[in-house]
Image (cartoon, rainbow, N blue to C red; front, top):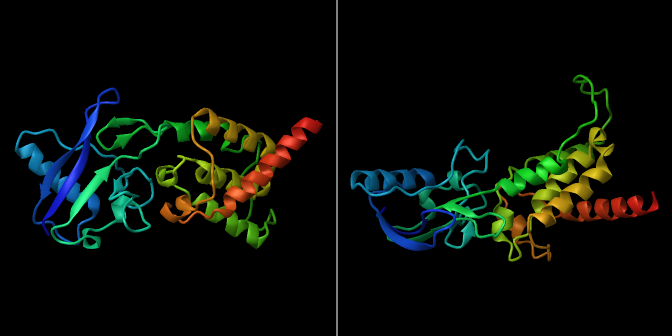
Length: 249
């Protein structure tokens, strides 16, 4: 396969950026998207040119570091992570536009790399269980309803990649925050700090500059783990309950 790439190049967070065109030649359809970029970078190094900076780590669809907007879609045309997207999803001779996440709370550091520290700070504000839970109990020691366990597990599969933010016209982080709130609040160990958690995490989300949710569903459609919008509805209920409880108390 021979492809034309329009890649966003930006030297630093303080400098301006622009699209630069590159040729990707003799690309195997079985390569992953990141492997294709590796080949392009090898060619740039041989020419003595600056290679394209992009984020990656596990390359197994687990860590969520591979955050690229490909032809206007977070992670590309399939509902998967960029590292699990293969070049057979594109056509020979196609022009592919590659950009970083576009959201004010995710400033571009260089080329295709963005700073997602805002997500870390949201987690630090309450996405954990600080009460003493003791040692690891036997599987049946703490009864958890099967429905709750399934919903908690599904929410916990969120990898925090930020595709939901990149897909949202408001750059909302509601799906990410809702997944983190849900998976803890659905389990007995997380219920003790339920009110404090949702209040602090929502407040931090707003402080970081993320937009509001308008229920268009673009976040769910782009999420590589298929996190459900139901989690946002659950978080809204928990938030309202926590606000009322804090005023009554």
